[in-house]
Length: 350
Image (cartoon, rainbow, N blue to C red; front, side, top):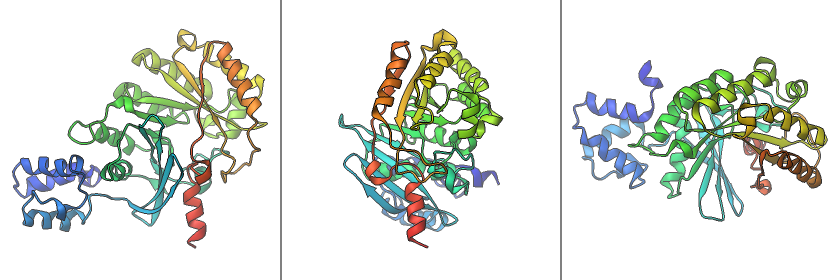
């Protein structure tokens, strides 16, 4: 049973050992995948033909467990809908910045059952957790196509800290023999799953952490994000304080501006109060203001973003000494909000 749960790299290695292949065969396979960017076992010509045939028989033709079904592109954004086992689908977004580096937003669950009122993925409901391979294969797909993997955020479909397989995926992504990424290039986004945050503090202190706040008022946050009942805001903030104390690392606060709902100056003042009352007066928190994407099909609908409100909110935080950035918008023209490509694909393929 344990073998089923382990990632494909462990399973391939176990297979080679069971069949008495020499140790260097695993190195050759990893070199073919990560250096030569070969995805098919049959094309790994450095391996003997009999081994290639055994690998195809055991693991299938391709190293990938995900299948691209549909791609959408705009100038700086590509979005891929992947098919996964069980006839389900997940989404991955690739963002190219003008400075030349590439960022990837990956999914950790197919759908999500936390029901945040402004989220298209929550509208789908939870189909299932992704395996470690399905998580890391989203990145492997782009790597094999020659992309530079500069940063990865777990901000796609699903709540990353609700899926234990995410931790194995982090191990695979940072393993020097596999993707060999620095933990500081990885970001985990959470709506406030306290046990998961504590695990990040203990085991993955260098991985960036983003907390989805979206309202500083406990009662309103519960209405927008039902998880707030189970893990109340102030308890989450205490846990984040502890994370900062233990790791000396900055924590990011994601704040989606929902017009007429959470974009008032009162909200801004309360965000200031919430953060200034924290460890080191909140100097290691950084607020990212995100404009609501008006094309989202979510449980509640919101108006177009009012730019004046966004700027005034930003100024209120900035003048109070809070670290704050207004995030640039990517991919509105291709419905890059998580869950949208999935929803549109389902509609068109019924």
